[in-house]
Length: 274
Image 1: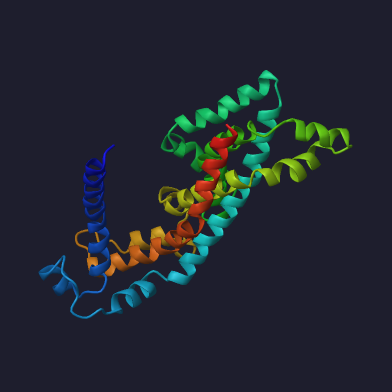
Image 2: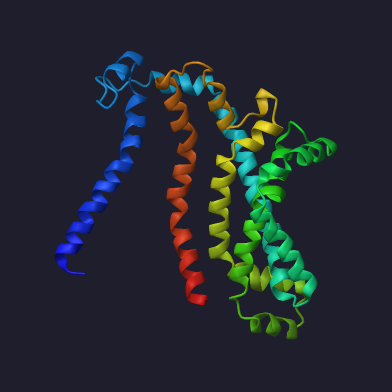
């Protein structure tokens, strides 16, 4: 590609980037305006950058409590996913028997079946376990019914790239299977663990349907439910609604910016080993 084509490509990419930034710009500037100012000048900068909208949103959402509930659900779900998915993937990857291939196939079916199809039986199971309207119920559904299949898929692909000779050498030295997994294999999974943590943290944080169905108590509400509660049935005050959206996504944006280099490292490590 010659220099002229590169310059043209860069110009096109800059234009596309600007177009993609317009909704974000509109969202952010509206949060600092009064309703009248937002209606008169939707794309203009506010005359005064007022924080009243954020203060009202913070209070209306009961933000500290909703954020704490979100953090509990996210940390618990991601921790369980890493522990159970990595162990299940390790067994599936290392055992040659057909039974384990069939079990892996069942997990992969979970990737193809829409979660919404199983809502009614799942609702009865959660009620039967006595964890309805609790964060535990949401965590169990997020881990075992929504995100585990994809996590096993990622872990198994990465474990296949780890030389089996390392485990054979440890076994010769008298190391047992469980110890081999935790001492030899698990530390080598760091790149894919970081990737699984990030992808699942984003998925659990952005999951709206599961908390909506399995959490009825206002004290158990997560951030997305608090945002949803403040959407009017016939009209919405966007200057009050947009700050809630900003407060809702800010923790995940910070988390993603901090962890994104681990995603790149995980992808690069996987491609090199493959």
